[in-house]
Picture 1 (cartoon, rainbow, N blue to C red):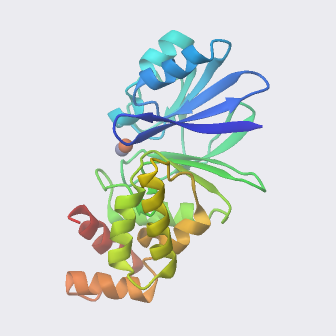
Picture 2 (cartoon, rainbow, N blue to C red):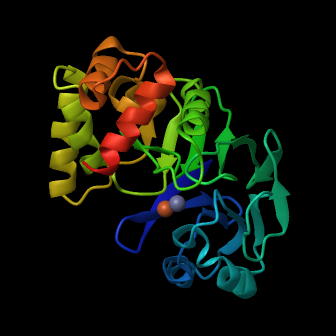
Amino acid sequence: MIQIDALPAFTDNYIWLLQDNANKRCAVVDPGDAAPVLAWLARHPDWQLSDILITHHHADHVGGVAELKKLTGAKVYGPANEHIPARDVTLQDNDEVTVLGLTFAVHAVPGHTLGHIAFYHENSQRPLLFCGDTLFAAGCGRLFEGTPEQMHHSLSRLAKLPDSTLVYCAHEYTLSNLRFAVAVEPSNPDVTARFEQVTRWREEDRISLPSTLELERKTNPFLRASQPSVKQKADERTGTDNTSPVAVFAALRAWKDKF
Ligand code: ZN
Ligand code: FE
């Protein structure tokens, strides 16, 4: 059994901590800061950090890697097509990597950055997805390097994973994403209900993650570009007929950038 907890970092990052309780070994995903991980290890002195998984090269995801590797000897896995400090293993699309006994399939998901990857563990009951800054709860990453076509394709690929997949994103952006989702789909009862729920959770300082792919398909406007009502909103916004889901997606992303 692997237990997964969030270690908060900076203002809204989560470093996901995977714990193998039987062997007292752990792994982290995207440690942008070494300090929260080192603090956890100091509170658990008989545990060993064995592996570090990286989704993309941004500083808030890799800033702690070199120090953690130096202090713990952890093995660093990261995307082949980006500069990742202290990386030991380069990962390409469709590679497999086994960490703490869990095998993850690597999915190339360009858009936020060009080399961005996601880690997917297939499990009939609770598949796991660590998707960095590609898919967020009710949102998606900004297009810093890639095109709308690339990001739409990447999100469509993730959206095909099973309903029950637990989605571990790297930021607590859910509430602001849902404000936007309500603007796009004011008549979607799932969006309204989720907005109310996450508003309560955040008032209680409760984390809004992980999400599930079922919930994302129902409430994430960036996975809903094929819905007629979403297209209509995008058309109103751009004043044009966005004939393809990619064009709708691009209109939504540009709108959200200024929202
Ligand atoms: Zn990023
Ligand atoms: Fe980030």
